[in-house]
Length: 597
Image (cartoon, rainbow, N blue to C red):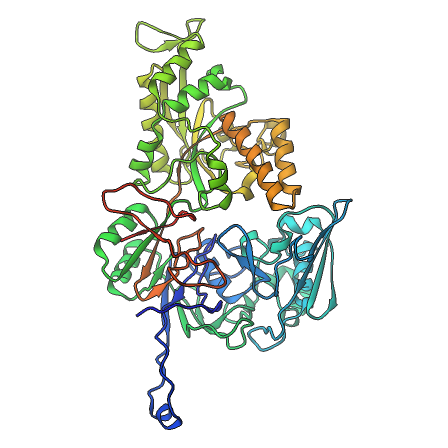
């Protein structure tokens, strides 16, 4: 039986964008007399089993992807994502904002953020958590002694001080839009580190710092659960932390079970020995489980943080027409992207209109203003005719010099090589139907690491790209791979599109702190890229998760979805969770999550 869990400590797991799981609880018992309580049976242990694909590793060099759910259970930060594009407080009692005065901006561009820690917060060993622990964590990340802890944000921090044990004051030398999310796991800060346990080791043996037993069996964190046992190749057993600042979790024990083989994972779910799986591996696996499983539900996230895009070459392309917006537009509208979604993503992804993730709150606001580039063969033909193209005797189009319009469609070896190749074949077939001589090429595993070969594709490349505002800098001129920079960063700005206007808009986005103003700048960024067709989104990477019926609140990677009527860890209840009707049109949840029944 389920009941609503309103306590913010009902958190169980988070993965990349937040996977939250709140266990169903038993209904409250009636008031008992002392004799009745003594005679009552002891409460049964509330235990869940969480199936993950890769071995758990809590070091910052490895604590991403499959390891992130475990890390976020063990190590709470000052705040955590709220699933709506913002953050909710955890170890801090408020998230700094311009409105509450805890985030201040000076005319010079410098900033100050102030975090007041909750009273009574404890590390797993019972030691009080103080502002000095966060200062130590910033020292480890900022001084470069162990590069794995460093993030881009630390370069913007001037200093951090503790006016008192429960106050952390951070001074910034420039505007930084995620300053309020300090030590929130979604912004790459990592979890806070206990000075009393790690300072000596950091000071005396930085080279061996990541090899300490602290990073597995002896991990001491700040989160709602702590390590009870650990077997790196098998999994870990986590138990409730009695001294967690938001109260003891309602779940007593979580078994993190490593199951690398997807078929074995599916078998365990069907047998009822695994309650939660945040990543089923593919949409095919998720749909198969949906059809076979009576004991739970399959949850679909229409974007796991990436999308597959058709990327044009902007430096010395072949043919030269690739640099012409009319040509790119013609090929865009000659591409049946809905058919690609239906074929490759099983119809579970919306057609991307930009790099924005459909789970991001900005997406719905900006989506209505963007050009669609809908499938329109007649329009494609007219655009090519307007460019002066004429059909030759063999049926292929030729330019005004008589040269055939031949273009290569190359598919990347990363992000699902087979799916990329299928998309390339479908796109090339569609272009050939309008008279463009499209040929196929596939990046071989041997050439996957050849940066020059990867950067200098002649026509179009099908490759995954980040569907996230965090990845905006990958579209600037500074990240274009060139011979002068040895074709780094890699992959960087894959299209090699360069624009002073776009560079300035992206820079403006990252220095605009007020959210409303920042979203307006983002709209200009998105419009520039979509209007110029710097790349064309084909389909999103779809995340599939499994949740037992006795649980509530699971969401696949990159999305937070508290279940109906449940307030999970301070997040908004998603009582409007959307079902996908059989044989009907797929509706979209405001956060983009579907429940497949």
